[in-house]
Amino acid sequence: MTIVGFVSLVVCAITLVHCYLWHRLIRSTTRAGRTRRVLTWILVALAVLAPVTLIASRSEWGHFLAWPGFFWIAVMFYLFVFLVLLEIPRAAALTVLRVVELRAERRRVPPGVAARRAERTALLAAQPVSAAQPVSAVRSDAAGRDEAETGSAIGGVIVVPGAGAARRGGGATGGTNDPAGMSRRLFIARTAAVAAGAGALGTVGLGVRTALGDPVIEPVRVVLPRLDPRLSGLRFAVVSDIHLGPLTGTEHTRRIVRMINSLKADVVAVVGDLVDGTVAELGPLARPLEDLESRYGAYFVTGNHEYYTANGPQEWTEELRGLGVRPLGNERVEIAHGGAVLDLAGVNDLGGVASGDGPDFERALGGRDRSRSTVLLAHQPVQAVQAATYGVDLQLSGHTHGGQMVPFNLVVPMQQPVVSGLGEVDGTQVYVTRGAGFWGPPVRVGAPPEITLLEVHHERL
Image 1 (cartoon, one colour):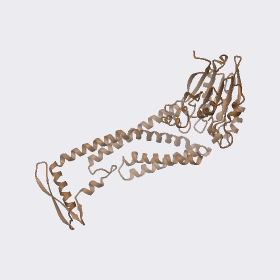
Image 2 (cartoon, one colour):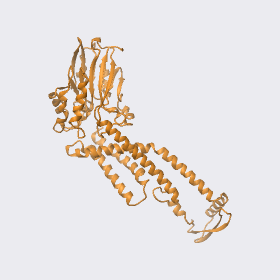
Image 3 (cartoon, helix red, strand yellow):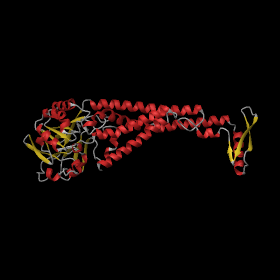
Image 4 (cartoon, one colour):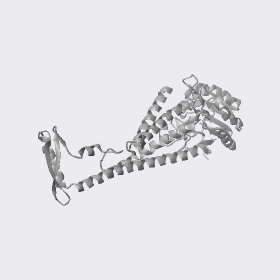
């Protein structure tokens, strides 16, 4: 999908969601008037803010929109989720209300009178009626008294006093001229709106706290049957999707470096999506990476976001090289440990295909000694489909953020074979880290940030 196509899809989705929010949060909860107009214009402004933020936050001039814009995008999303979940109880409450009103109406109109009115209406509909011809009806009250009820037929149309008002309804619900019934409908709509608002704000608040907090250290043990036993216990610190950008600071990087160094890993693997901007904009935020510590070095492969930057990924690969982090651009190195050798390879992200800088598995993996185990760094889990054809034992990936905000974790499998954790693709094991940062809204729900301490072993203990 092209950038234009993606932007068009996002704008359409945002527009539809805001139309739904207007219907449920404004039209259903307010009567026509000034309050409804003011709330509508506020929602229109927020609807414009969302796509503008997605576009402008990539440019330095638009960084000031990041916090309000991305925060609203998160609230908007969870308002939509909670309102959709509340549709069933809301519909059930309205059904109960209609049943109660119908029973109340039947108590007010005795069955005999209702039957006679229905019969009279049928007879009048079957006969021509002259202009202004009086129509009389007889009804009984609760005490059994009869009284005349007069309407008029003009131009062949029966006009019953009060019927127009009953059909027109009123207020926010447009279904009844009964003030009590209308109030009950407003109560149901407003209760659903308040519940959705409280749920959305509470969820986003907890999600912000999680996203901005310390990443979780995930210890993982992976058995590689072909691994030389002398390499058992080799430890990788895996981090991905740090996403240095307008909502992060230098302390975000320092904390990640400090936590990685505390693991005392043999190899540090930075598996893509390090930045969301140029070296000129974000260079100072990346500088703490020069303090990374490991026995056999720190390595980096590009993610799709490196290709979204204004100057492309090359300036970042050179910047990282200067910070002591070695880029693996479709290449491999040997990790000698305990008298044995492991091949560590890296391929570029699929985002580089359009610019001719995509993954080259043959260059990275071809011609190697296949008796040796190979660990591949590749940003997207789906790249394991090709890696498997080269006999890769283990692929380390990121990209998915573990879904970042539930229920996106249910959507990710449509594109990627593994959402988070350890999986397998065509015989190649794939570990997908949830990432140590966030993209877009500074919110993580159900997918806390992660730094992985992964050990490879020859056999199970």
